[in-house]
Image (cartoon, rainbow, N blue to C red; front, top):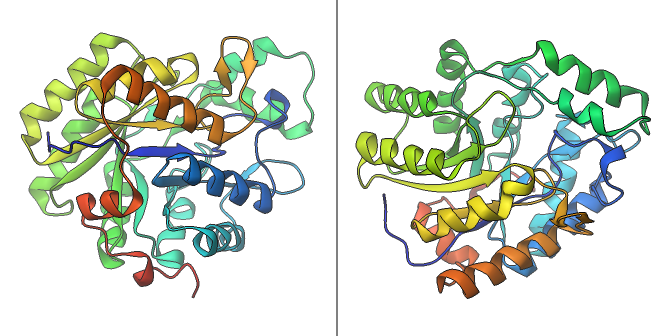
Length: 313
């Protein structure tokens, strides 16, 4: 993999997996999402992975005005790298999810590199009642849900990244997705160096085991040599163990209320900043690596810079 002494911390502030019933601290309204992102940046995150939600119900949406509102607030307040999702929610069609790239022309955006079963329905076992009517149906519907990222989808999506100078963060939910990336590198639709987000622990994707992360890195080394870097998203209670394993292996870490609602066992995190502060502290204490600044992260990735985005029109 590519060598970088410092650790890049990404914070995913709200996402599309957790429903409002699960935590009163999950940010919903644009102001809340922006405030959480700004505080996470102040705590040490150099990348903010951004989703938006319906301000009234908390349902995940891809409303471009909401994206522009939230991204604009963050852009005006701090220098953090704003990374909108093109994953949206697994129930959304790819052509709906990708619209944020030509709209905002961000420095980075996520890009899912393959289809998987995406099971959220186990959450239902933990709750008798839900705050909003849509929540139960949303979770139950995932029993028969394929997160749609086919080769035809990627043939359409990847050129849009290139047209707007947006670096894709390649979301890989299983080992086969790395081979999909190799296919697109060989076709010239992805350029090296690459940056991966290994997504571990989603019901339907690769499990959050120590051995699985080691295997993902081994295959990435085999396929891409020193032309890639990686970060790790460990779902739920696996967030911090996999983050620190990644850091010890020379990679980077992602935390946030999109991926995990708890600061420790049985204790809800009250903010995204709490999660960022914890991974920063663990990184210092357990690995001795320092945290990258936004400018260092931007230089490492070779990003085009915030002035060349369309976040402020």
